[in-house]
Length: 186
Length: 228
Image 1 (cartoon, each protein chain N blue to C red):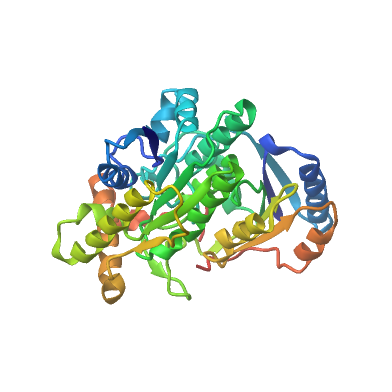
Image 2: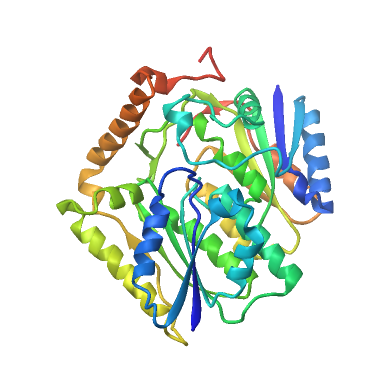
């Protein structure tokens, strides 16, 4: 079983180190072969909104940088965990870049989600279980809730957890999740 | 004279963006006799390494209006980077005015404007971190179509609603002590024609792919899972 951890070199705080240690240890104990990608702003350029990943080279970003390898690793993992600082209630710039540039893994068309909103359909039959863990010190309740809402209100196939204190509560939460490939729920 | 800075943050490099179009629409409604207007394009700011000058301009602003497309239910990475770097600049320099008003115009390709709400909340959080006053957002569904088909009869009501929201924004920046105001939600009553909207969207993608020499089935390629 393959697990991928994606994090941001720009925010290697004590809280991050603790979270990374806990998560890595948990995954190894569960029998996962784990790869850690600590990315920085130089690794990835910004999405340029060209939609080349849909209409020029479907399924692949047309920008020639590390993102092609990241998308390949994501799509061939059983579990992907994003460790993201919470910044203005959202992801850090580098983690947001990784998320934006995951667009090739979706199709361009429209489908209706169970709540009636619109979403792009999945390109693949199965996806890794995806978990986003937001971390930070002195995160306001409002920012923490926003961080959860950004994903949970709009995507059924991604879990979100918040890590603020140096406790192992995050492991208890991870332990309740099924860590395997799943269908592309909208 | 007060400074209004209008920031467009579409990641697009070559094409004129929908976000910029909306920003120009709202800019045209702001009284030039009362306000000095400066436009910043975040993509150009990065491309031309003009960040410090643009941050200086932002720090002198009395009013900041952000216009951007929704990316994965929040801000595009390029705008996230811009805001984080600007926040760091403000912390380091202490260079910011008091009583700054901030607005957000967010558009998405999905027809439902309410999908943009979390992006507006991020701009509100950013405003709070700057001790600025977040006023309200204009949330636009089907943004690209709103611009491309703005003269079509079926868009008439939506375009009127949009112009009215931008007029309210232009009026709001003039009031010293404005009371709280709700955000504006703009769509074109697609609910009776959702299938048509989806159909037109699909046709558009297929047409673009064909222009690039692809067949319809190529759009469904699975390069990273060849056995699925």
